[in-house]
Length: 167
Image (cartoon, rainbow, N blue to C red):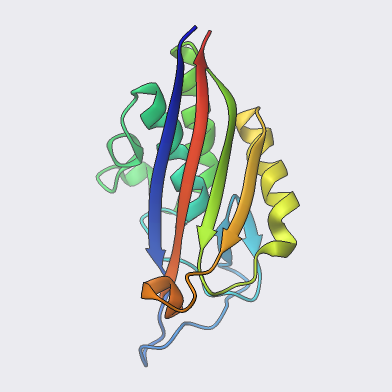
């Protein structure tokens, strides 16, 4: 039996206003985390939707299977992924894993940041990620106690981990 662990990190900055402060939340372009729209929070900037949770988990999955990473598969040189949802990356990674004989046993994602408060979304985010990956995925969040770019409320980071088995 072959088992592999994958881990990954992703970070994106919050959108800023003309005055350099955080942009006001925009209901038509919400913050996306773990494929969920999080209202009343500034959105993250990125080539895609900036979903750090989905990106970190996708990178962990691809890395564990030896299938490259987010950038090599869906990078900024690929215009078809401009503005793409984190769901697209997760679904694509799941298809790539399956096509290469890998099954996800479980995984997890932890988002790091001072804002927004994410505890109310733990269950829905875990459920959404688990449904896409077809395995138990746990979502959680923590702060950096005011330190670094996440502590200064400049953006969010995420850690992803997964366990795969060859089938």
